[in-house]
Length: 419
Image (tube, rainbow, N blue to C red; front, side, top):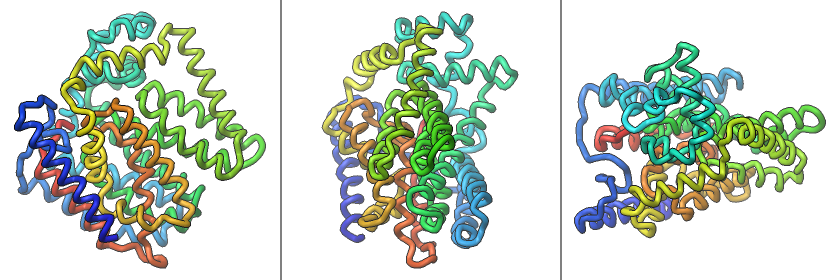
């Protein structure tokens, strides 16, 4: 445990000092508090009290709730507490911090430019350079969703904010369902308080929190399908495939999450659900390609071009391979790091290990240089479930919950993030 915490802390310090050195040398990385994006701005005060209050209540009550509450209610409570925690952390910078991060260079700014949805999708890759930075970096799924919401009377930044916070909460609950399927309900219950109080909630004021909800649901549905037979398995697999298709149209890099159900399917020797899910996803993507003219792989190629001629060219690959992992360590918190060291021989190792492998693939790809505290939000729930290994007997250690909350509060008041 001590060795793991020391190694994780050392990685964060190395990334910080290395990044500061690069900034001093004039490297324009557009981050000012390496390994995190944002600027150092120490601002403790009354605005942090709501987050501190939520943390204290959660630390005092959630371990008991996780042990005694009915499973369905625990899922709801986990999601609600997680959303409340994220909102409280955002309000360290005032109420406007709940919505302002969703405006500059974001998907919602592209919505007014859509006069003809068919033309927008058909010309998306060709006209990618004309859009703002977040639209350039992703498939058109989020923009289309916000456009549909706008046409349905739910336009504007406030519904957008509700969408991303709900996504984060759904992601936390869905990860619990996946953990239960792989390791059993007793084990999954132990992770619930940690999923509700994760430091990564600081960055839920971004579209990636919504992506987390969709992608975690997709992974969980396919995992559930591998544990069932017959029609029920096929239905769950097909739904998982549909959710994976939606995930692919939200963020290119999240297709790596397919590694998680693949590993679980291989461990269980159940390949039919994976084939059903793959078939459902392929049908959707083919239909979109034929019906709209947007080819997913062409969009990915165009995004790669824009990425590497943009800010990525000033971000050294070698540094960010290290700094990305350091930022992730801060996002998942020290309890997750210690949980990793206790997974050997436990069923959760297949779930958490495959998620970690997906993160490493994303890291070495070079397509995520910096900003991963936001970009990798969909990976976080699958890593945080490792905290279930911290429990001795049925007792969930409040000290580790306190450590998680402490890290989150420290970052929230010390780093002014754009999200």
